[in-house]
Image (cartoon, rainbow, N blue to C red; front, side, top):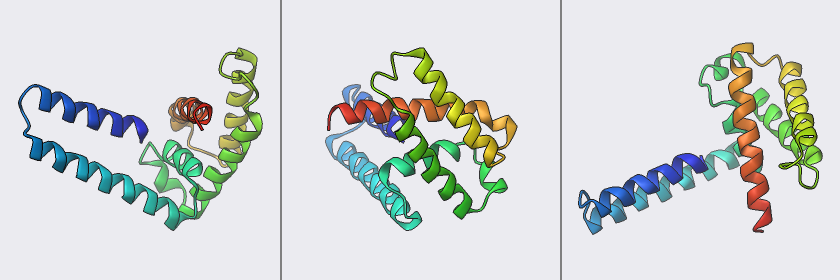
Length: 143
C-alpha cells in the first residue's frame, strides 16, 4: 500500500508540475488519498489487525485469487502468524546478512506451506512479504 500511495502522490505532483492539474485539483487528489488511507485503517480495525498485520494481510492477498482459497478468518490468522514469525525472525542487521534473509524466507515458505497457500502464488507472495519486511524494518529505524 505504501508503494501504491507513493506512486499516486508522485503522479499527482508530476501532473501539477507539468501544468495538468490546478491547485484545487491537487487538493482534491490529496483528500481522496487521505480518504483511501483512512478506509484502509478502518478495514484493518474491522479485521482486528494492527497496521503491521494489515500490511502482511495485503501482501498475502495481493493475488486476488487467493481470496477464493481461504475465508477471511483464515487470511487474518495467516497474517497474524506471519507478523509474529517475522518479528521473531528479524535479527539485528538481518537486511545485510544473507543467512538471516534466507532464514526469514524459509520461515515464510514453511508458514505458507502450513496453510497450503496456492503454489502458483508462493513466489509472488514471498517477494511481496520480503519487501514488506524491508519497509517494516526501515520504518522501525525512524520510530
